[in-house]
Image (tube, rainbow, N blue to C red; front, side, top):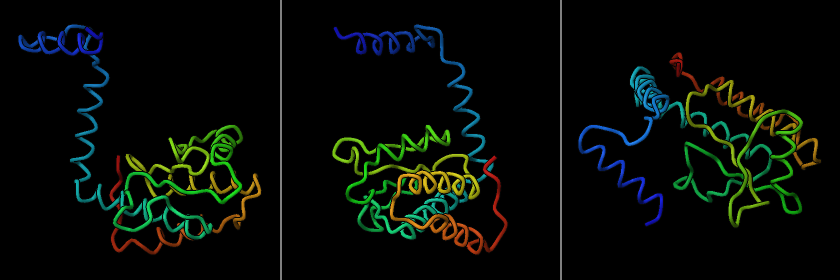
Length: 175
């Protein structure tokens, strides 16, 4: 029997009597509880609205850079992560590597067919507009360092304007 199947069976057998067959991952269990507490304190509708706003800021920055999202229509857009094509002749892995090595910030790489063609910006979790702007500024600097055909500051300014004027009411902190 494969070891992963055996481990699941052990867990199921132990769980039947209320136990766990190994040292329980308490940090994960407590972390899950704290995450749920944070979600319900902010309110799920507010969480969804915040993630949409953050994603929309990234999408607007992408457009200002003259780049395209991998998702080809709004009904396919994700409010959790944006995959962005790099221009023809550029390597997306080079820009994500440079962002990490030069600025200490990690971005997702394109997987499978997207490897070398796209990078990802995540906008899910305990994030604010300003935190997203920091990521946008970082990838924008990395692209400028590698001579991408972008205007330095263009994507960040576009996202700033969207975040700045897009609030009718004060934002609840995701804390």
